[in-house]
Length: 312
Ligand code: UDP
Ligand code: MG
Image 1: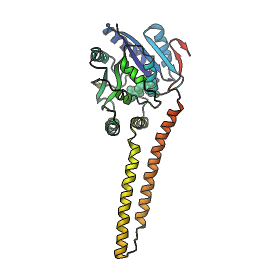
Image 2 (image 1 turned 90 degrees about the horizontal axis):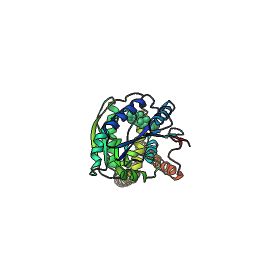
Image 3 (image 1 turned 120 degrees about the horizontal axis):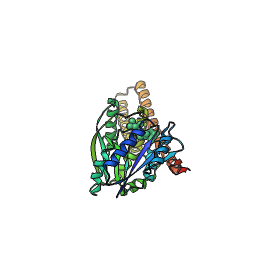
Image 4 (image 1 turned 135 degrees about the horizontal axis):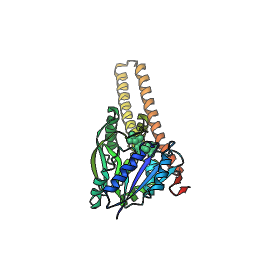
């Protein structure tokens, strides 16, 4: 029988874990033609998450887990889970039941035939989400597609089931600044998008504030596009052209009419404008440099403190 690994990053999820575990067991019961293993990753939780995982692993040998030495973020947790997974198929799922476990049935049907390498959930309607957040994510999808060559599907989630081949491809990308949604798309393969309506979190609360999401979007764009860097060169050329034209006009005007040019206010605003643009682009350059610096350090993406086999 084929084995499906379900990777679940968890950060302070003690309220939902028991419910999630029951749901997963129910789905495993429905899909008795495959074996399951659950790869929980405790991303340095400060609540009872690790305790729950320990007791689940003691009761049920399908449950495996690894626990980080501190919070390293969801991207790191997903990577750890993918590395842990031994299945012929690997699913990635949030712990909060916003990704309905019963969708695994449909996902497995899509990939088992071999026509698709991956079946992924696409959010069509968002319950319990503010207009700002859904508008922001639509804008992000547009920008991402304009700036990078990696196709970004609007409403794409991390929830998906992949064939081993695709998992190996994802694992072959060693970067430190991981934007997994972009990586899933970058590696290619045939993906079937399955629409679903997002539910509200079963319990607990979201770990993503608006600022955190904004930061994440900017990091995602920077990880998959260097076009913003070229933008400064283009703008530089445009500024030079405008400057040359105004210079010519001023010289000709002075030669013909001999008028003294009184343009202090214009000069001041132009200096401010150009200075502002320069600083903006230097700042952006710095951001890319900082990313390169972090990559060059070759630090591990996460550190494991404990697994189901005991302390490290
Ligand atoms: N998560 C994580 N590390 C973090 C933040 C979140 O592993 O630093 C996990 C979290 O436990 C959940 C998933 O990532 O399983 C999605 O998080 P959340 O539900 O808070 O995000 P949202 O659904 O609101 O985007
Ligand atoms: Mg959630």
